[in-house]
Each structure stands twice: as C-alpha cells, then as structure tokens.
Amino acid sequence: MTSIKESKELSNKICPSCGGDSFENVGGYCGTASPFNNIDSKLVECSSCSLVHMNPLPTDVEIDNFYENYWDEETSVQSTNSNSLIGYKAQNNSRIDFLLEQNISLDNKTVLDFGAGQGFFEEAIRKRDVKNCNYSAVEADLEMVETLKSRGIDVAPKIDTFDGKQFDVVVLFHVLEHLLDPNKVIEMLMKYVKPGGHLIIEVPNKDYVWKKNYQPHVVFFSEKSIASLFKKFSLGNLTILSCGRSLDILAKEKSFMKMQRHRVGKVLRSLGLKKNKAETGAVISEEFAHNKFEMDKYGNERQWLRVVAQKELN
Image (tube, rainbow, N blue to C red; front, side, top):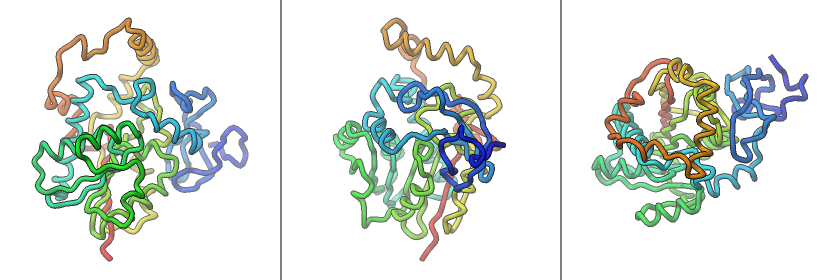
C-alpha cells in the first residue's frame, strides 16, 4: 500500500471521490492523445472507497480543450463505422428496457440527457414510441450541439441553460468516468431532479481490466466505489446492477499482442492502408449486437454498472 504522505510519486493528494489519502498502485495508464498519453501516468486505487483513478489527473483546462472537439476522428474513442453505431443504438434500446424493468416509464415525463453525444437515447425514445416525453440535452462538443439542434432537439453546451428547471428523469450514460470530480457532478445533477424523480447513471465496470485504451476516462468505478460515492446523498432509493459480458471473459480477451495490433491497425486506417471492419464485412443487426454484448444479462462482475438513484420527496 502506498500512502501519498510517504510517497512523492503520486501527484494527486486525495481521492476524487471520498477524499482518502492512501492508495495502491494498479499499473500504468494507457492513452494515445493529449492529455492522456503521459508515459508517467498511473492508475491508483483508493484504499478507503476502492475508486481507481488516473494519477496525475488532467487539469480542468486540459479536459475542456479535449472535449471541445471530442467527436473529431483524431480523438474520438467512439467508432463511427456502421456496425459500431448499430451497437450504440442497441445499447440505448436496452437502457429503456432497463428503466421499464425498474418501473420507470418515460411516458409523460421530462428527461434531461447530460452528455448526450450523438443523441442515440433521444432516437431510442422516438423509435420506441414513448408518449409525450419532453427531452432536453446537454452536450459539451459544440459541433455536436449544432447537429442535435438540426434534429429539433432542445440542447445546450452548458447545464446552467436549464437553471430553474427540474426534470422527472436525468440520465448520465458513460459520462461520469470522464469527469474529474464525481461528487460535484452528482450534487449538481440532483438539483435538476424533481423530488421523487430519478437520476439514471451507466458507467463501465472496472474497464481498465478489459480495455486496450483507457482514454479519456479518468476514474474507474466498481460496484463498491460507486455505492460509496452515493453514501453522501440523501436518497429515497438506490439500485446498482451489473450487466453485459463477464469481466473474466473480457479480461482474457485482452492481451499485449492484441493491444499492439489495435494500435498498428489504427495507424494503417488513418493512412488509408487498411479498411474498417464495417467496410469489409456484413452489417450487423441491433438484435445481433444486443445478444453479442449480452446487454440484458445481469449478475456479478459484468461489463457495465447501471445505477438508479431516486431523489427523496420533500
């Protein structure tokens, strides 16, 4: 165990979740774009709440600069090939199924999507014929904001645009792991949730175990660490479930050689010397993607964590 009081190697003095000051080294941080490609960056685990985070953490300015153009081909970690897009759409459909299983219908509800990305959740709402759902979004990438506006979506780059409003449901899908201060984010978002309403979060589960490239994630949650995060908030109810593929299987699929082939392939594709998989094979269906990634399978130690936090009634 490494205590930051004794070691000069760790740059961040406290855990970004619980404020603890004792850490265990997990390993190196793997990233390719600035500010995530510092060869001295490490992953450390808080001995108090078990949150794993990047150390040193990027600065606020570095993070803001990165996300101004997050969807650029040079920095985006979400693929834009057709099969990947189908996978993202299938995942958003599974999220609506999950909400229904938790007895949360979006019919006649107001929804705020924080970190909406390409707007796949809004698309899923429309295609599922949800009745009278009033959807709004926050997205930091300015170019993506314009794209979403062109689709008639009520969207803004800053959440304070919606100050004075509260929503029945606030969703945060694969966003929290990108942010430097998860406590501050949860506290802020709860102000936009109506009493008795719900904050819905999805994050990867220990993705440093199974991913080849960690960027741009700065914190890495487990069931234990995300439960610890919510202890600070007064909630009516809290549900945390793990879904997707088994972490054991995902970890076995990750290897040094696969990581090297991934990096070489990315360079070759950027030079036009290699085609994307979607350009060389058949296009998959949403059902295929849903089944392949086991999006409706729940259990211990699976790929994603889904959180339902209900705000207390006044």
